[in-house]
Length: 145
Image (tube, rainbow, N blue to C red; front, side, top):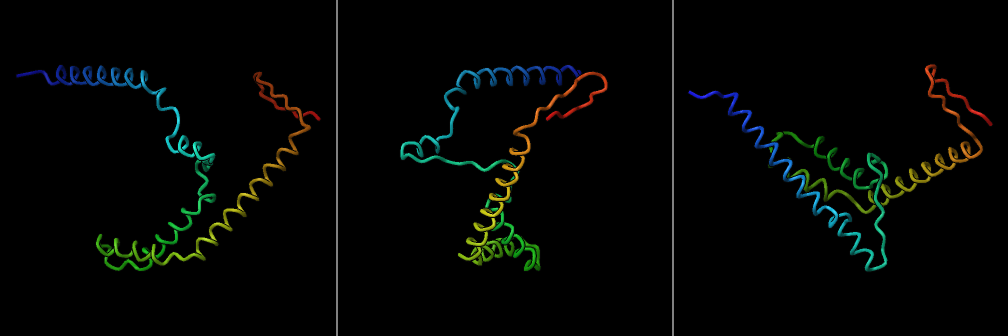
């Protein structure tokens, strides 16, 4: 009979060594992959790729379109079988019109302007302000003009 704890420990020690070894190998070559290949290609043609901020689906048209497709599938799905769902997704995508895309783009432009305005307002408010943040025990914050 064998001691399962000893085997489990040996296995986890080996897993840990493999993980450490893999991380060391990654650290040796990761500098070769600091950029995105698409950015390199775009730069060759004097283009720049702009990335959307994380967690801001209101700035991404495809999120609104995908929501439209999912809504169609949810409304039309009767059997909840995979084949029907596949057909409904395809049909939902086919239902997306040029006007849907135009509306989504207009929505995103509107949201961008709102965000830029808010950012400009906050920049203006903060421009002439000095903040003093006390880190003593009472942690009181004061704002001076």
